[in-house]
Image 1 (cartoon, helix red, strand yellow):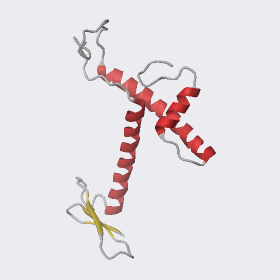
Image 2 (cartoon, rainbow, N blue to C red):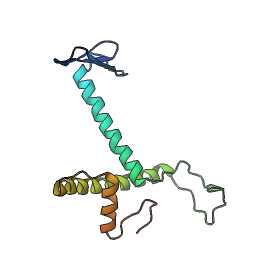
Image 3 (cartoon, helix red, strand yellow):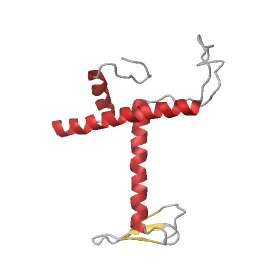
Image 4 (cartoon, one colour):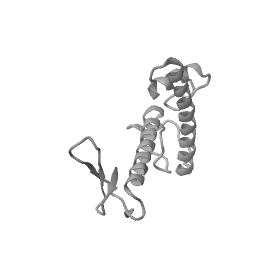
Length: 145
């Protein structure tokens, strides 16, 4: 049974255990707005989404732009070629959407490979295998293979 106190402490009672399992969630939701089980489920969903986003960023490694102005130096050297600066928010949106689409493709392939081989596949191994078999697959640095 999961209960929630006004201080944000969530208490999980397990029948076979002597001590209660408790943890604190810092939230703006009042107990009247969201009870303990719903709050815990929402935080678990958030944690799952964070895990997927971390996996996407670690394996696909999109190089997001933080500045709309051209850089005078790149890695300590003057750039050989300079491009006009664009809307960095729009460019980042396109880059993230492209990477999310790639993540979805690799995730579907991973689920299918796990079902076919009866063993777990890491996202990185599956992405490498997927890119090796796909013509014109984008590599980590953004260039075509």
